[in-house]
Structure formats: structure tokens, C-alpha cells
Length: 542
View 1 (cartoon, rainbow, N blue to C red):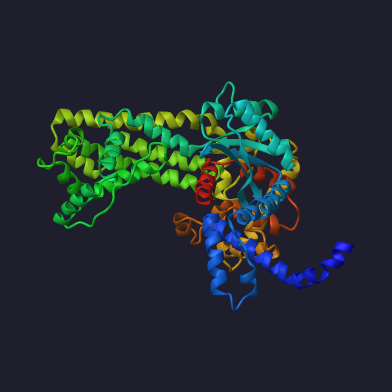
View 2 (cartoon, helix red, strand yellow; view 1 turned 90 degrees about the horizontal axis):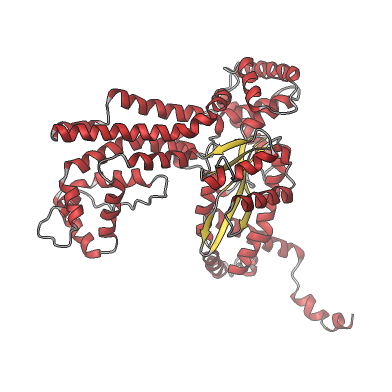
């Protein structure tokens, strides 16, 4: 008390009113959240804070009080925002009947991180979120299993609600003998193996590439490396672009472990192939590697490039679709079978692209026959590799795929087939049939309204978000920001999970059995792309 009396004047003169403290704290929290959302580093946020304090020094008391240095930004993000958003996600997961766990591992400096994410069906549809970030150098199956079990228990998630394990397809994660999946499967019967089809497509291309007569990956890497660290060579290359009256475009680096870099690198090289070929064909240039010179003088290399550009376009498009956050295992059968059909048609007809065909007609017949045989082997190898994983789950993926077409074309026999394969416990089939019938009737009623079904769904979603202004906050940065493909698809496209969410909300009576079935099916991921995106977001922060 004596100490308080002595310093009372100092305390009362420097203490801020509670309102100003709260407003400043709120401003700092929003500022850090905004920086994280847009990938700003803590250092840049510290710099921006100093700029704001200078700009608004005479007009805003809050800006003068704000203090967001690197340490404080990190503290707000880690100790305030992260726990709040994580708890919001966990609350929604607990309200859902089922969820899946997705994880991956990557190094940040000398630290090994394991983001742990979940996918579940909420009151407005499918959601994904990160619930923990594990720091552990041990990548053994047993250790990963123990870490994930610790996260599940710490988060208070029901263990019997776990439907699948989503990860890339390494033996440690998805092997049949001793893996993370088998360890979980020993604890949970009928656990779904959430294979990442983005990884499968990528690896299928790598296996198929071995069947080609030209090592295109090595060729792309060597071509890029020739210019990447030499300003002089780039300037010389620009002169060839000027000669052909083409705009200069930088060659794209192909990284073998990146899903989408091969097609992009090939597409860019073909765009500027004439000037680049002229550069490497210049006999006066003594710095040109002989191997690259031979490649650019060979019609065979260009023919293989054209073939890959043609075939990889379909594979790339499929990979991008699988990466969309609106895609779940329910869409996997439609997406994968569509790609298989397109590639099999190319095998049956021998069509590998118009540019490729024109070059095959120009080159010697024996070389042409050899190249066409290698193209057939490429596609066949790719299909065999993809089918090795797809065939393991094709029955259940086909069965649950019918739910992606909405309730209109869904029949009771298809629901029964799905129940037999998934073996969901606790379903009352008598009640499930009645609930299914009620939802079908509800759908027929709302479909007859003058307002288009798409507009009704959007109105429902906006109302749900207005009920809780924080509904969108638990979603991660990438959940809120649609990529370009998603924006293009947004026009009047009805997402099946949004339709199901609206039907459950507007139906006159509760439908717990039907909702339980839908929650199970939509909790299974189609790929591990969401977790991979976590690392992309992390690189902006660290």
C-alpha cells in the first residue's frame, strides 16, 4: 500500500482509459490478422506500424498507441489469434459427427514441422482448418501416430468420429505393413485411406517419363540453368527475340518435386522456342553445351515436348481441380474416371496432339514409329500407376460419388450401397429412409419456387453468416481467398455440399441419420493439397 501511495500520481497520470486500451488492442489484433491473411512477414508489419504512427500522428490516438514490433506480432498471432481460431474450428468439428485428419512434413530451416489439419461438414458445407503445428524431427510411423493421437486427445475430438487419414502416399504414411494408416486402422475399424491424388498424378507422370526417348526433365533443367545466373547470356537471348519480333519471356524453372512445374516449364519453352533454338544453334557461341545444342537441333526433342504439352494439359487440369478446396472424395470418382477416359481415347486413336502429329509426319518413319511407341508406353504407364491406387477404393468412391450429383438423382438403392461399404455405426435405416424421403420432398418444394435454386442457396449462406459474423474467421487464409479457377466456376454453380446444408436447415423436422451419413462422406479428402498450402503460407511469415 505504501508503494501504491507513493506512485499513485504517476500511475493515474499515465494509465489509459479502458476503452482506449481495448480499442488499441483490437486495432493491433486486426492489423496482425490482416498481415497474416495477406502473407506479410512480422518485419514488414513492424515497418508498416511505424509508418502508420507517422502518417496519423495528428489525427488518431489509436495509431500513436499502436506498437506492433516483430516480437509483439508473433505473440499476438501465436497466443491470441491462433488459439481463438483453433477453438472455433474445434467447436465446429465437435458439432459435426465425423472428421478426417490430414498432415504432412516439411523443413523450415533446421526445424521439421507437421501441420495437422481437419476436414468436416459444417452447417454451411465442407470446411477445412489447421488445429495444430507439431515440431518434431522424428518422421517414423510410430512417432507420427503418437503425435497425432496426442493432438486428437488434446483437442478433445471424439476418436470414433475419425473417418480417414489424409497424407501423401509414402510408405511411412500409407504403407500396407507398418505405417501411420495401419496404426490408426488397428484402432479404428473401416478407416478410409485418404490417398492424395495430386501426388498420384504427379508420380504417375514421373514413371511415365521414364518411357520416353528423351529426358525432358533434364533438358528443361539444363536450359533454365544456362541462363539463370548469367545476365550476359540473357541479353544475348533477348537479341534473338528481337530478331523474331517476339516479346521476351523468362524461362520457368522446373522443380521435380513440384506438382505443376513440368507443364508450365514446357509451355513457356514452346512459347519462345524459335529464338531459344536459334541461340543454341549459333555456331559462333562457344559457351553452348554440346548436349543442349544437339537437343535443339533434333526434331525428336521438339516432338516429345509437343506430346507432353498435349497430354500434360489434361493431367494438369485434373490436378488443379483436385486442389480446389471445394473438392472432396465424393468428387474423386468423377474426376479420375474422366481423366482415364480421355487418356484411353488417345491410346485407342493414336492421337497425341495436332502439332505432334505434324512433326511425326516429317521425321523418318523408323524414328516416328519409335516415338509413337514411347508415347503409348508413357500413357499406359501413367494409367497403370494411377489405377494401382484408384482401384483400391474405386467401389466406395463410385458409391459415394452419387451424392455429389445432389439429392435429385439420388436413389435409396444407392444410399443402401453406400451404407454397406462405409459401415457407419449407429444409423437407423428405417428412420434414414423416412428422412431421405422428407428431404426429397423438401427439395421438390424449393425447386418449384420462382427464385432460382442457386440464388436460394446463396441467400441461405449469407443468412447463416449474418447469424454469426465470425463464421468465416476460423477458416484459414486460403479458405477465404478463392483462386482464379474458383472465381470462374462461381457463376451459378451449385455445390452439392451447400445444397445438402441448406436442405438440413430448411427441412421442417430434424434428419439426424441423413446428416450423419452426409457428414461422414464429406469429411473424406480428395487430396492433401490443403496441408501443402499451409507451408506456402508459412514461408511468408518466417
